[in-house]
Image 1 (tube, rainbow, N blue to C red):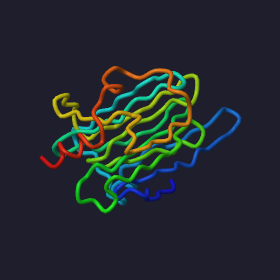
Image 2: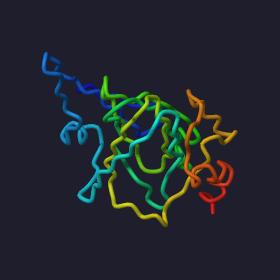
Image 3: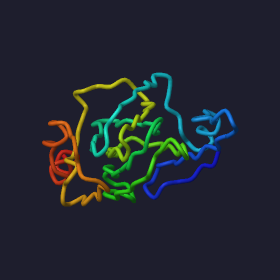
Image 4: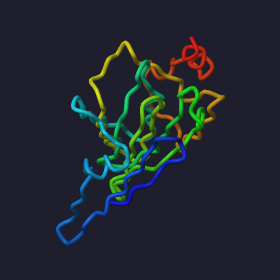
Length: 182
């Protein structure tokens, strides 16, 4: 498994090595020893979740207040355009937007450290995204920024076909900055 650092401080990119033969393939999607060697520890309360989206759907941009939320994200089926935004005041990469293609061909997956906003757009007819989150979901800690915020200027590669009401009406980047400073 190849491991690289992202441009945003704390982001780790895992690139498994699938073993392919006439039956299909086998790949290791995560190894705690390799993760630990690169500072990734999702802790004893990790929670696994999965979403399924149709082409053009955007989910995001989501984060959590307080201690934040670390997660390991990968596309189990199909492909997504995955986007991260550093929302950690004082971080050397604060405000940086970074994107990755996650798919079921290369199996690249991301460690997203606490304090980042995360979202994605489904690039295929069906895209299943799996998340391993470091602690149980606490809806009262949710925060978000609208996917089309002009200050972030996220370049979504496809027409938006679906987005939740919550994500469509999320606050602006400027609103979030005011909350983080309060």
